[in-house]
Image (cartoon, rainbow, N blue to C red):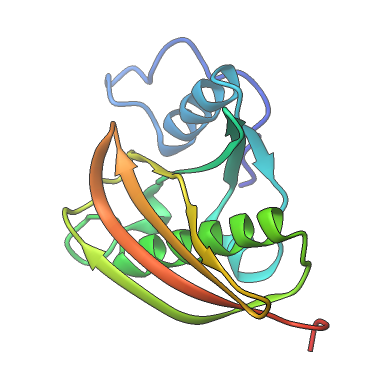
Length: 164
């Protein structure tokens, strides 16, 4: 089943009071849209994880991921790899935006899990450039839920001449 992330969410949950995964996902999408977020076009592996959302606030880039059942680990929490991928992608995108360079590769990503993410959480990343050289961009982000840090990540991104 394909979800429509661009429409408004239903006003009511299912008759059991919990709502379906689709209803909860569409409700999160409606909330993000109303707060000024837009869907970031993705392909490949990132398309499987998303949708990812983005916006600019006071000149700074912010990214969001509304977690769904597909993001769970064996304990029912958000899989650590999802959070690492989210941190990597958002730092890399910000490095691209700020530098104006199209091609980057992650050289290093150091990730610290501070707290578990719950399915249904909306993860927010606000990456910042720590330092930039001619060939490397040093990035940092905290992934938060309701302004509570759940992941800290620092990454180094190599500026490439082309796609390969």
